[in-house]
Length: 101
Image (cartoon, rainbow, N blue to C red; front, side, top):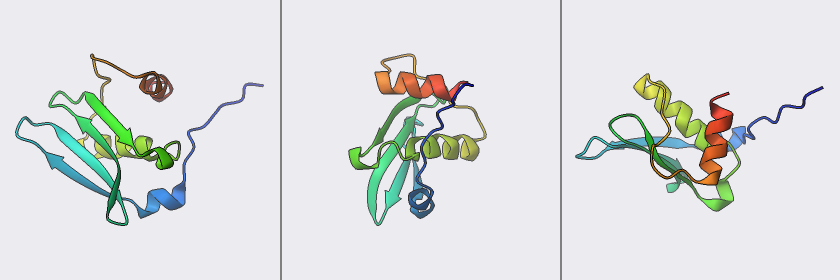
């Protein structure tokens, strides 16, 4: 039997998040995850819908926030996000590998 590792998710935390979207003058979009008036993570996408960066504060990592931001952005924009052609960290490579299954 193959054991499938699911993405961890802290549903209680996710339910408390407020997502704010900003667009800069170059058309890059940033989705910020707010908790109690503090930013705990963000996702930045260029105008070609490639992920240019995702950052989650250390004490909030591995709780499903990055996945939530990706899903939120894809739903909001009605697109499928693409992996950056430039530098991708080892954590990001693993994230994309699991996301593209």
